[in-house]
Image (cartoon, rainbow, N blue to C red):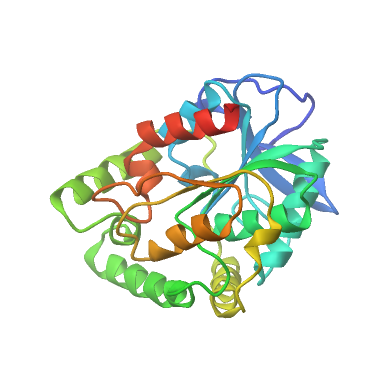
Amino acid sequence: MNTPRNSPSPSTSSYKHAPTRSVSVRGEDFVYRELGPEGGVPLILLVHLAGVLDNWDPRVVDGLATRRRVIAFDNRGVGGSTGSTPDTIEAMARDAVLFIRALGFDQVDLLGLSMGGFIAQVIAEEEPHLVRKVILAGTGPAGGPGIDKVPSLTLQATLKGALTRQDPKLSLFFTDTAGGRRAGRAFLERLKERTDSRDKDISLPSFRAQLKAIKRWGRQAPSDLSAIGLPVLVANGENDRMVPSQNTVDLAARLPRSELVPLFPDAGHGGIFQHHDEFVTRALGFLER
């Protein structure tokens, strides 16, 4: 059951208990959750491929929300949001901007993870007056090496996961080491902490649309990242098999006002979840500088 937005004030201090609200965006309902202190520039979370509200690590969200107003949402057609999911990153970025404006914000910070990082790059380039600072995690530039392989890797892991009854995020987000497997299991347990009013899983048509968008992004000509003049923090694990970690280093080199977090050791695509304490500390420091 979605609670309609009737107050601009976050009403909870834990993501586990944050109510799911909705806001109308051009005739469709976008669902979201918000928490943290009132005031200041809100931090908008842009999630990964197939991700819904319940795929954000509560340690990351709660950690950020100790000092920041944090808002997670489902893009058009995903999870509890209505409408048809776009099959381009650019259209997803336009939807995210419409969502932000529907909440009445004229300036935000962005945290984009994986596919959400693609979306964040487009927003930062097309709406520089809307965005103050950007955090890009486990992501890469248009045309980056290996990004067009994300759909096939994801489908292989999903099939293998179905056969072995193992969540595909274990192999996609974490390294195949004792430490990586342990971190992955702990992450999956944290995702179960919310027991009431959980979000819907992504539908198959929406999943297909996102896969198509990612393949397009991976095959696009590289964009001119020097046009993004905003401060950007870039983070990833040192062994990301989904969006190869060299993309993270490349992003940091090509963005004129970037800061690269040293790549998290023994970590992959879900490095910010595995090393959530360090990531939250660095992210808050960056946002508050």
